[in-house]
Amino acid sequence: MIFLPKILHLNSLYFVINNCLHLEYFEIKIANKTRRLEGKFMSQDNTSSAISFGSRVRKSPFFKSTIEDGAKSFTIYNHMYMPTAYSGTFEEYNSLVKDVTMWDVACERQIEITGPDAHKFVQLITPRNLSECETGKCLYILLVDQFGGIVNDAVLLRLEENKFWISPGDGDALLWIQGVSVWANLDVDVTEPDVSPLQIGGPKSPKLIHKLFQGKHDDLRFFRACETSLDGIPLVIARTGWSGEISYELYLRNGDMGDALWQKVKEAGKEFNIAPIAPNLIRSIEGGMLSYVSDIRRQDCPYTIGLDRLVDIDQPTEFIGKQALKKIKQEGPKNKLVGLEIGGIELNSPPESPWPVLINGKSIGTVSRCIFSPRLNKNIGFAHVCSNHSALGTVVEVQAPHGIIEAQVSAFPWFKAERITRH
Image (cartoon, rainbow, N blue to C red; front, side, top):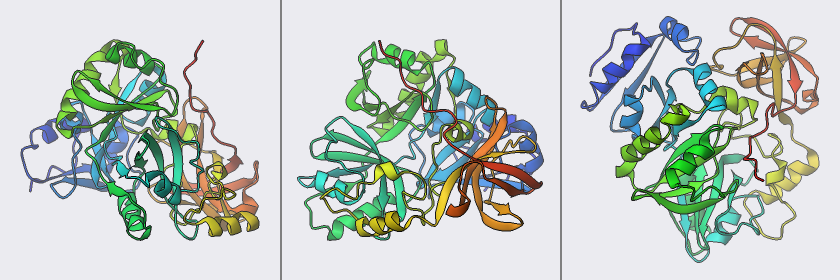
């Protein structure tokens, strides 16, 4: 094992990682002070942090390319390494809202459901009505348990009549779905295919897609998908993506071709000032895009987080949690996820742990994520609070590590997801 010096300038991190890739296992340690000066993207409390690369956690097909292009930090998401920073949250935000970006999101491990009963089975595991989900369509769905709690949130792709992909958030959705299939008594196969998404997002992304595919997918509509290829690289292209900006996802269908796809996208994007980035905290909060485990917790139900539209309890088809959700809807959820506009100094990094939300010194909930928005010139975020304190305009206090700061319950999203203007 190689241990790097405790204080390591971030610009040298690429060199060290690049020259250690041949090792089975190595560990990186970075001092908190250095991190805070360099990128505005790391933790605010730890005196040091470390991440270990080894064979126990999977590397994406784009892993080598992300290292070569300057990935400075990683997290583990769905048992795979995912980059969390290149140039920093604010720098990457500027690239996302002004130009075009490319993201390694291979950690969105696809769950493939096939077989004569595929549609019936998928309807069983989500409360969203799938009666109008035709081939080529994508839908945002929730997976819920028998109590109405959210197991995961995901994008559903229907590629063929009896072939679906579920693209989940962080969590063991594959095991959950395979478990359901054991007792469902339906004719389906549930597997993890060799599929790894590469996301392209930003206002110039349609121009990049036009160049890459010579106009073939210029008419691809929002939340639609189709099979395609790029110079022999097999793909599914979808107008989906967790960015808030115009986005596409290129679902690579051969993990051995990851670096080739990355380089083709990077080369074609140079004229559009393309930059590799990580999922961006600022733009996701601005756009009201929720993160599983933080904004969406296991104990939350769709009504808690304001996603009532993804539940149809009146549909004739049965689904897991139907009776529980009927009861919750009738009685009302005890907690609500709300938007917050937070005063005080600019928040340049998110909470490491939930921050208490107070009224008259009494805790009424916690902040899940928050950050400073350059376009709004204010701190914004999400909080889980008691339903009777969730009204817009409610003034609360947030107990941050640097002190008590005033905040106000706000509507969200602050900026709606972008769409392609068509004439």
